Image 1 (cartoon, one colour):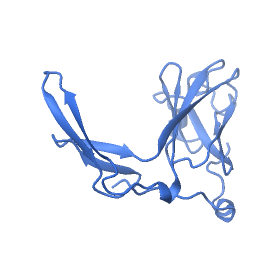
Image 2 (cartoon, one colour):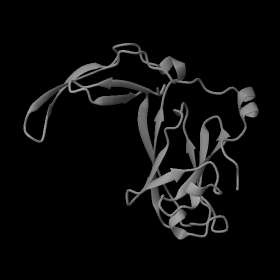
Image 3 (cartoon, helix red, strand yellow):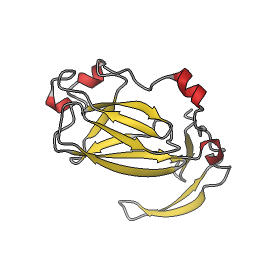
Image 4 (cartoon, one colour):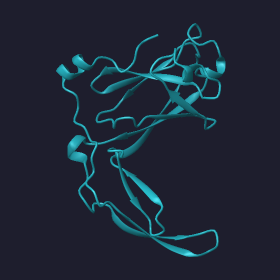
Length: 178
C-alpha cells in the first residue's frame, strides 16, 4: 500500500499508477568530476520524486551516504546524495575522487544530467475520488482495440505541507556528508 500513488486497473485488470502533482525537469552541467554539486530550487517538491539521468540515458542512483554498498557497486550508475539547503533548495551532491575513486561511479566531467522531479500542493493537492475519470482506446500489437478506463476510486493521499522552520531544525539534514 503506497500512499503516494493512486492505483487502479484497466479493463484487462492490469495495474495502473497515477501520481499527483506535475512532473518537471532541470538540466545541469559541470566541468569537474571531483565532487560537483547542483542546487535545485523548487517549492513543493514531492517526496521521493527526484530521478536523475545523464545524456546517455543512464540513471544515477540516490544514496544516503557515499559509504554504503550501492554508492560503490559498479552495477549501479553514478551515485549522489540530497542535502537540504533551505526551504526551497535541495542540493544534489556527487562524490569527490577522494571519497570514490572509480570514475564510473562519479559525475563525468563535461557531462550533463537531467533531473526529473514532481511538485505538488501539499495536502491541498490531494485529488478527490473520480478526479481522474477517462476512457482511452488503445491498439494492441495484434491490432485489437482495447478500452482502458482510467479512474481513481480512492482519494489522493501523500501530499505533505512544507516543513516549518522548527520542524526543519528538529529533523536535520537529509544526508550525512562524507
